[in-house]
Length: 113
Length: 116
Image (cartoon, rainbow over all chains, first blue to last red):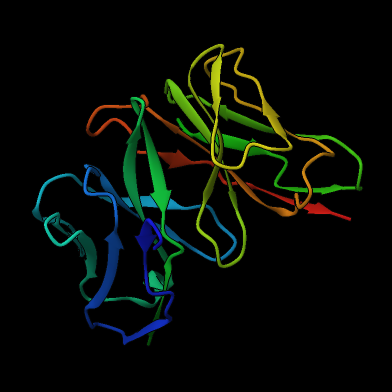
């Protein structure tokens, strides 16, 4: 079992729709969860971080965390073609005081005009 | 204008050569990291440094070396011992290495290394 799992996609949604991206993780001790956006050929960009169960909203983005079920999701409202990218989920793993981030392989999102 | 810079953007290397990738940050972050990204795979940690003059191996350190002589700089050397060096190399930094909210990692633009 991978430490962090994401559906590779592509997830295709029409412009204006809600895109829902999901991520599951295996380490119950994880405390920090991150979503990165990566455009083709570019480096990852941090778009959301979440540390507590529930929802966290920032503009069109909402991160949802459920530690009991070990999943974290990202909702993108009013999806735009510019949101087309690969979204990486990252989860921390504490190892001798150092918080290592473990990354999923990413979900590719395609937003069609 | 704070951020992380990496150079060069593209690098071509002949087999048997060592090459050094540069990473500089002016965010005053204590922790710095090197990752490697291959198609279809997640980011894999090569080395990390929590503080100046200290660094630790990550998951795939074989064939790589680093130094951390200054807070701002964390260069990565890809040695000839690295069997499959062609990849996208990403440098990142965070305020520090632990504590809730403090390990948000920010990435530089990356260096794409190709071995000819």
